[in-house]
Amino acid sequence: IVILSSIVNYQVLYQRMAASISGIVNTIKELEEWLLVYQYCNTIKELEEWLLVYQYCNTIKEWLLVYQYISISENGCWYIRYCNSIKYCNSINYIRGMAASISGEFLQLSNGNFNYTMREPLGVVGGIGAWNYPFQMATWKSSPALACGNTFVFKPSPFTPLTAVMLGEIYKEAGLPDGCYNVIQGEGETGALLGNHPDVNKMTFTGSVPTGTKVMEACAKGIKHVGLELGGKSPCIIFNDSNLDNAVSGAMMANFFTQGQVCSNGTRVFVQNSIMGPFLAKIVERTKNMKIGNPNHDDTKVGATISEEQALKVLAYVDIAKKEGASVLCGGERVVPDASLSGGYYMSPCILVNCEDHMTVVKDEIFGSVMSVLGFDTEQEVISRANDTEFGLAAGVFTNDLKRAHRVASELEAGSLYVNNYNVYPVGVPFGGYKKSGLGRENGPEALDLFTQVKSVYVEMGDVEAPF
Image (tube, rainbow, N blue to C red; front, side, top):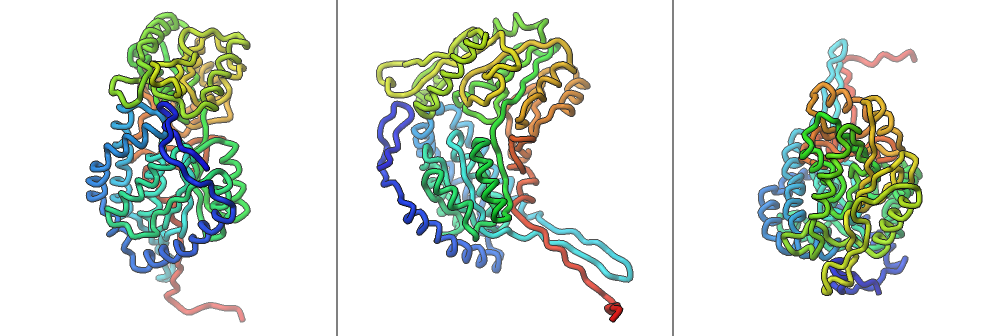
């Protein structure tokens, strides 16, 4: 039996029987039925009619309180964050509007001949999500897939299985037919069976680099389309001409939201040496004032870490950092906010100084509230050091020099750049990484391109010339 517990205090929410391999295989066999649904939808071209965006938005607002309770219980993120995160799920609004503009191209050729292209659905799309933003991921992945005429099969993280099911209820209330959006539950073996199924034509995955590599290998064997949003160890660069209060706010946004469990976080904070002292004084004071507590309370700023395993991993990285020569300015310890929360895994946000580029804590993705502060002197120096990583998901630049901002942004090797802010995701803006941080983009017009395939049609207006 698998027991899902509330992350707030590890209280049992519900129990479910663990699926056997044979049971999972029977579930995966339903893909044949889902493929028929896709073919039906693609034939009568009614998916746009079913994605009634205003009805969807009204429905999701009605589900808001249920959504908040489930989300907070699943992954421990604090209340205010989840109130704000609803706006990120408005991507379906944007996608619906963009889907109406999906079109091909016309090319006039010689002698009256011409060619045109059409964008068509891929078929059945499989998705696998991580546990840090489960509802957002299910929405970001499913909405473009459905809007382009595909059917979608989603496997959420076993840590956060409920919000994806809730999204299915919302889709159903909005008028989406059964079989268009589907949820399967399970561990890694379930995801592997989904990725290897011959009727799945694309996989979209969010998670770690090692697991993403396995997904890509499975797609390579089946010659499938693949989208990967993987890890990061992003730089957040603060120049001495920046607004210091904004820079401190940005560094905190880049490290401490969702207990630091954000793939795009700018956990390598490069601060120009001439302002290092004032920067550290301000950020330590503000970090110490962050309230750690029950995520359901609206004054909480730090909730619970997803699991004991993850909490111990983060704390171990702090110990490694100290052994390698870094110093802890604040945090980095397990905290029990009050007796009623003794079963949860709470940690004080940590700021490390005296860090060097070669240190484990500076190179590895930790996925916790651990900020590594590094000094620098010149622009070219910090660009070189910022790019010295196998990741390339995001980067931030804080400066009041507009020319410098554009210059540095153009040289940083990352898919998402932020100037004088951090971790901002407007729905019309593509999100994705360079290097080992992934392939493809979510949101923006690029998302629709990745859920369609191009058919080219050549039309001959004259006679066929053949040398036979």
